[in-house]
Image (tube, rainbow, N blue to C red; front, side, top):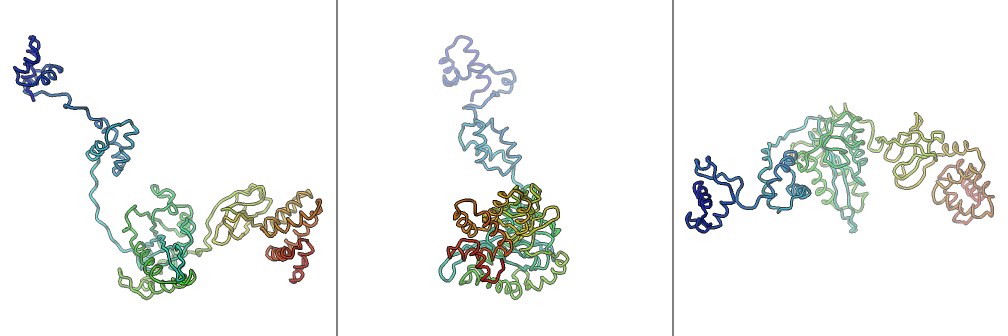
Length: 470
C-alpha cells in the first residue's frame, strides 16, 4: 500500500504533465495504481503528517448486508431466539437480494449472547399442594388380532405419587375437565395447584396465562391455581411424564386383553397394585400410605361433583321454533320464551336449560341432528297456536321430530289420503303420543310399520294389546 507522500508525488507529477506510464515507472508501481490514486483527492496535511492514508471506504464492492444491521438488530433484541431463516425471509421481503450466507454471518455476529443456563431446581411438593395431568395414547392389539387406538388421561399427586388413569374417547376440553374431576373424586379432593402441558384444550392464550373457559370454571369451583410448563421442558412435570410411559408400557402394551371391557376391568386391578401394594421408586413408600397424609388437606377442598355430573356452562338463545341448539342437536324449551337468553348446564349425559330461573332437563344427543322435545313443551306450543291449520302442522312436525320411525309412519298415513282428511288422524296420533310417552309410542309405530298397517286405530290396537290405554 502506498504511503501518503507517494500519493502526493503522483498528484504533483501528473500536474507537471508527466504521463501515467512515466509516473508508474518513477514511483515503482503499476499504471492501475496510478490511475486509482489520481481518481481520488490529494492527501491532506493530517495524512501527510501521519504518513498513512485514511480511506473513506475499503477496497472492493460495497457490502449488501451492511445496510441490514440497523433493521435486523431490533428483531433480535425483541426475540433473541428468532430463527435465522425467519430473519432472511424478512430481509428479502424488505428488498435484500444478496446471498444467504452473508445474512447468516451477520446474524451470528450481532445476535445478543444467550443467557447462561440456570441450574435445575428439584423439589418435593407438600401434601395436597401439586398435581400433574397429561393425556397419553397407544395402539392396543387384542387377542383376536384387532387393533384399537386407546387414549387415556392420567393424574398424579406429586407428594404421594398416587395416580389415577381414565380411558377417554378424545382429548377435547370437556374430556380434560371431566377426567380431572374424576381424579379429584378418587383422591378425595382437589390439590392447590395443577400442572398441565400447553395444548389449546388447556390454554386460550398461553402467553397471557388465560385458561380455557371449562378449566377456568373448574378452577373457580375448586379455588385452585393452574401452572403452565415451559415448552420442551418435560422435566417440569416429570412425575406424570414418567407415569404416562409407565402406564403405556407397563399396562396397555404390557398385557393382553380380549376386548375393551376386559381392559377397563384390568386397569382397576393394575391401579390398585401400583397405588396400594408397590412402593414407589422415588419415595420408597407405598403411594396409598402417603395419600393418607395428603387427604387431611384434600378433604378441606373436596369437590361436590363427579366427572359425569360436573356442569359445564354454555349460553344460547331460544329460536323462533322454541328450540335451543347446541353441538348439532336441538332441545325444546317453554314456547313463551322465544328469543330469551338461556343458560346451558352441560353434563356428560344430560343438558339442563335454565331460563329466568325455570329449568328443564334433556338427554344429550350431540351431533345427531335430532330434536329432543319434552311433552309439556309440545303441548304448550300447540295450546297457544290458535289457527287450526297451523296447529295441525305443529302437531305433525312434533311427531316428525320423534325420529325416522314416526316420520315414516306419518308419511304413509298422510299420503294415503286423497285430500286433507289426515288432519284428524294426525291430531289423534299426536294425542296418543302425548298420553303414552315417546318410547311406547315409537314401539307401537314400529309394530304397525312391520305389519303395513299405518292407521291410527292400528296403533291404538297395538297399545291396547300391551295393556296401555290410549
